[in-house]
Image (cartoon, rainbow over all chains, first blue to last red; front, side):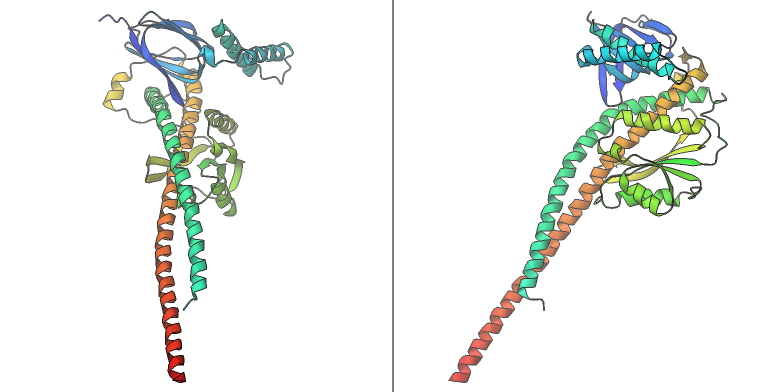
Length: 134
Length: 285
């Protein structure tokens, strides 16, 4: 059976962020950037900070900054359990830029005590936020 | 017999108490509605999280993972969620009682991570060690709080400080029924799959199973803690609403009782006065 689109559900701890029909989504995972089309084999992926692009069934495109969570992919349905996700209009641009600079500074002047992983994640988040605003 | 003035004073004091309990009941009703809406909105997330993690565990049950097997340390960490404020009936004491009566929970092998002042005070008085006091969290629980606590716990677990993690909270069944519940968070126990889950079990993982578990289990625990927080908040307000409702109707009863007494006393004094006047008039004539 061929699928034209699938149901996308994005759930955060305090609300249902998005629910609708989509023809494709793109996102960043621990294994690299992926695009998911309808009829995908069942798969669970873990999210890395990046941009989530939703290609809706009616042809519209939506973007959101996705920072943490995981997705359960089934042929007809994708459930994205997002710990942190934001629409572009919820992002504070100045704050994101400041966070980016801070993280870059921390990585440049890294000492053995610096939590590199944390700084890198912070940088990735800030970059994702700024990218989504463009 | 108490004098009329005494009864009157008593009655007005009960009346003002009733006004307070009535107001508190209204406030907690509003708060309950908000907390319940929050709890319901977040339910979808936990149910999905729970079923996903358990279907993963069911298939990787044999994997030798640090979060799945018994740790060496005998120490048990217990997150105790209670309220900061009292006047909520048995809400706080039920949780404390449950923790104290739990088998295997001794004062010397339990570390309390207290969320909420009431539980902390009661357990500290009984000699339990309070490892962490997070009373601010209960004012307005947010996901970030749960994340911090989870990081803290997993760090202690990784360092061998604690061997088991439990969550004690009050589950919110409905407005009038709140059940003190104890959940074991770590080590995670794999459960038998139901048939429906069996069919879902054909799942691939982009990341290696071990890595996936490393990333998923902290999220799983965080979501359980957050779920406990929002449910506890709803239960707290539900319990308070009930307690205040009872207090208001008790006050109502007392007031009608006192009104009756007051009227009797008033009548008694009038009768007495009359008798005295008549007796006086008779003595003169």
